[in-house]
Image (cartoon, rainbow over all chains, first blue to last red; front, top):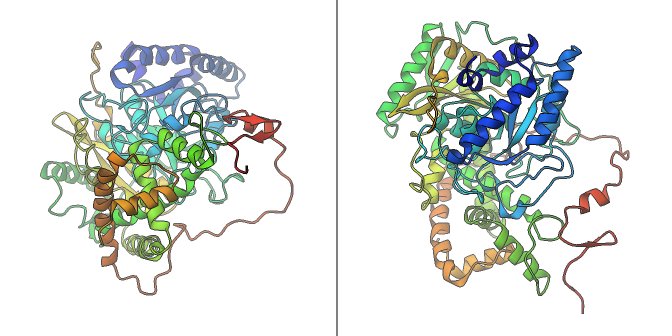
Length: 492
Length: 95
């Protein structure tokens, strides 16, 4: 394989090569590390590179392969979003608040993937505390989209998406509270899956909004995402909201035909506001699934618009509670020379948090404060149920819901940074899925002006299998997921 | 309902944040736009609808009341800004 072939080989292919001894985990790891070191100055997708630990893990993976104790992920390199706690390795959440934080333990997701033998290359850039849709709120600077470095990669898992799109690693982890896996996956032309709420343990994932947060795989195909998801799921005594449900083999059902699958198209997603080019691409993508025997059905999700308002009460409210732990006392940033305890709290927090994080803390504090709780927080929780009921009703008619992942291609740096509302609209198609706790996936479905767009597939609770199957079927018929950006200084 | 800089200063104080005087008007303006957005909630009739706090209406699991954690004080305090003899240090609270 040539250099380029190797960096864009699928995790599934690489796993086979490692199995056949065509390649060692150490060679593969060195290859990925070299590519990151050579090209990440263009993207800023990685905050911390863990080179030494990666090579030790790769050696262990090779030994494990040699004695026949490998899993499919043994020796496969990956990057973790810098929201996942990694024992002894800086975990910043892209915030000044946690700039020097080295967690005393691993997140369950990190522990599970390491136990499967995956090789952690480092930690990826993100919007600060996962609050953003452009990766511009990071304390460590914005991330560039590998397809056009003047544009954003999306967010909040923007570093993870850009890195996988740039061939730095075949896999990365992301988290998704309102679209933070799916939207950057769409904008960078990769495959990203947000599983059902509770499917994956949240232990050791730095909390943003606890009733919405969910981790998931980011990869270059549904097949690779399935392989990675297999190693991430399961109930965890350390997270009482992790679901005690059986975990299927997500790889096993990938090739089952989709004939007869009923796919719902919400009228609200395809209405007058949708960009005509984007609409045409999504319809073209859906016709591919139709050609495999899927049936397209018009449906209604009548409270799509109000989902934005609901989300921007619930997520900030939960964030304001979660982020109260950063008090300058137990861990994280502490201001210099506090005069008293209140000064310690206020200055540590004001210095440690960026503008968007502070804005959301303020909104959340307001929504939870005496006199406003019923009008905002309780009301939002009621509308959340109404939105969830809309999905339940739709899923009595269809098996999957489909539409665009994001309302446009990646925008330019700074284009939406001044207006929080414009940025919030980026997640109009994704955040209702978090409110309802459902699984959602984005697969590459075309290019507009040379920039990728994503098709979103939404499933019933705990039915990631159907999403992966439909995504895989689509990727057998199309080659959007194999399109590559060109980085400066490479032929690919 | 419009929100004033004084309201924002009060909310900031509840949130233990300090907003510089010269930024207060800007923060208030942006906050006001977000409030206009979230006011769309009021369009939805939620009479008789139970609030949803967990998307699967999941109940907290119970477990036997047994010790499962070992003492990890030193490990956990290793990341604290200031500790002494097992205590977190803060500025003097009582004179």
